[in-house]
Image (tube, rainbow, N blue to C red; front, side, top):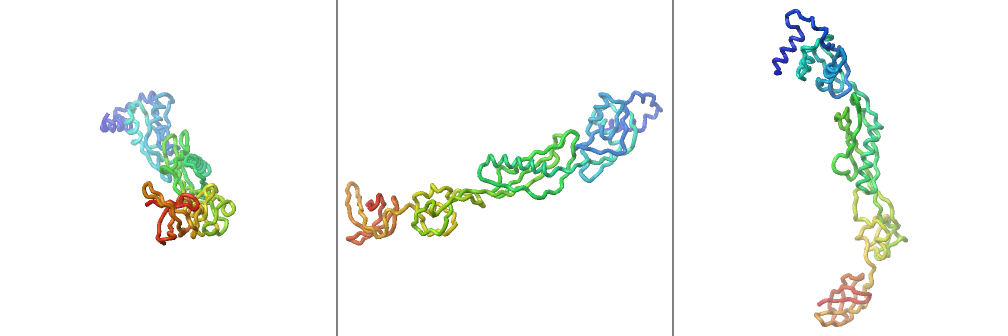
Length: 326
């Protein structure tokens, strides 16, 4: 049925066919328009706009016809009888078998309820906890103290919350959880809720000033839980990592230790006279030389030849022993 046929049929239903009929109205379904109505869902049905009698399968089918979207919050909408007739006709119903009565216009207003802030926060918190459990790490979050009043239609059947993390992962200092309000299975609105995050990490810290070369251990270091601006793997996080190491430089009190703050203990000290093995091909020659600085095992060491006073560089292979490749 094209639009012109629908309009012609609507005119016939609204104003009669000019033959003074009406004798068959007793057999017709009556569609009585209300003067005002309140809508609980996201759309408006004919059943909410009209009283349809007598009850039956045909009346129920007409009542389920969707007229259109419900008015937005804070606004009402006026719907005319002509619009209702057109809507029923467009759905494929035979409006010739209908009798329209009641008001010529209907004022439609949305029903809104105040959402429970604790329920919204509970949904967002549960989603965030699940995400943090998957990401791992030591993280604490703070729920927002204040939330603006949020209203939504209660729905004809249901109103529920579905919370999801915005983006692929949490940020260094915050996470945004979007709580979607689902009314009768259809999305109504998404509410973004920002949670501040504090990330913690175990770090090794000095218990007082430490001079360079001092052995590191439980006497002068301790493991503490520290809030970190960003997660990082540069800081040492256990005393086992400093076991057998010395301070590579003078360290201040309460310093978070990094790998660069540590050094292997020196097995050769500055001024020590050491044995030098000079290797050239298959020929090995030993000599005596003076260490110019401290050096741990496996480190490069600058030496002064005791006879020629020339400089050479070798690798410490054992206490008092340096190998020089030539």
